[in-house]
Image (cartoon, rainbow, N blue to C red; front, side):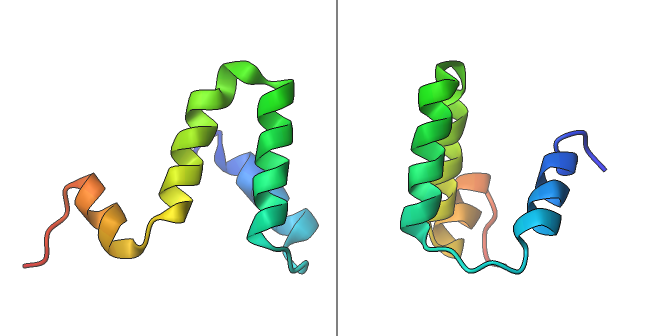
Length: 66
């Protein structure tokens, strides 16, 4: 497990049963960046990753259909 997985695991444990909208997630990401501006680039990359469909992600990662 990567160190960063601990935060992901905490999210799943604390909020895994909740249903949220993507608007709520976007608002939380904006609030996080407001409090932690040095992470703006990482949050932007994460938001772009989440916004793309699987084909876009595969292409960005360099995967091709065989």
